[in-house]
Amino acid sequence: MVRNHLNLIIIGDVAYDTNKFFYQDGTTYIKQNLGGSVVYASVPASMFYRVGIVSNAGEDFEIDKLRRFNIDLTGLHQRSKEKTTRFYNILKTRDRQERLTRAEYNENLATTFEHIPEQFLHSSYYYIATMPPSRQKEIILKLKQANPSATIGVDTIEQYADMPETREVFNLADISFIDIEFSKLLNCNAPTKVIKLGKTGCMLVEENQSVRVQANVIEDVVDKTGAGDCQNGVFMNLIANGHPKKTALAKAVEIATLSIQDFGILNIQDRIKTIQSRER
Image (cartoon, rainbow, N blue to C red):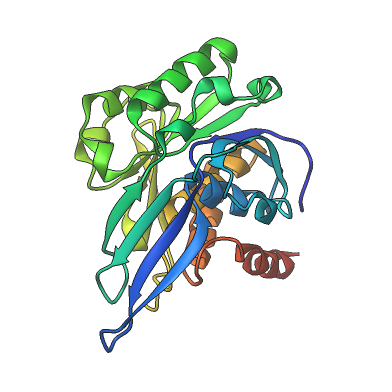
């Protein structure tokens, strides 16, 4: 059931993702989708409860594609004469788990604390998606001043995982999303940790107790771009609206598994609605 109350704000980047896929015979094809961590986190999350986003987009960004979702777009700032960030992925393996990534990042569109609308500073939960750790740290510190009772979740990628400042960010966070191979972050001070185990699922770790959430392993992966952000957004929005963490993570893993069975994230609502109808 979709509700209008806003408990989660997702902060990060929007982008266009261009993926180069390989057929089994060695030929290739290209797919471009609306992407970036904010899109991949907010679209599936919005199918459960309304969510707000904070990001900057170029004038080429197709913002109308997000208007049909239960997303408050007040914090999505579209800049004239700017080009939206592009990510280019080359899928290397048949299971599409390994990739090479290149970015054309527009620094003029970097999201900071100052881009958060005043009405978004009173929410209960925030998810700060992947971005340079210096920006994550600044946003967290200022959020904690503006809204001391807020719960803040963070994620990162391989490019930043070994940086000392990333460790500082994860020590400041209330909820950390950590790939299992990011060994320097696994013992960070975040009270809640979601350890991502790849295609097999996740581990929820709190107070030296852990619960394994198993994923339904998909052999015929179509496009795994943004699956982690999809999972994180759903998890954060469910717990922000009162769901137990274990239940929320199980649902988030389920939705992330659905997301890798199609190109992009904009059609995920149809699969989620199918699941919701079965549960009624």
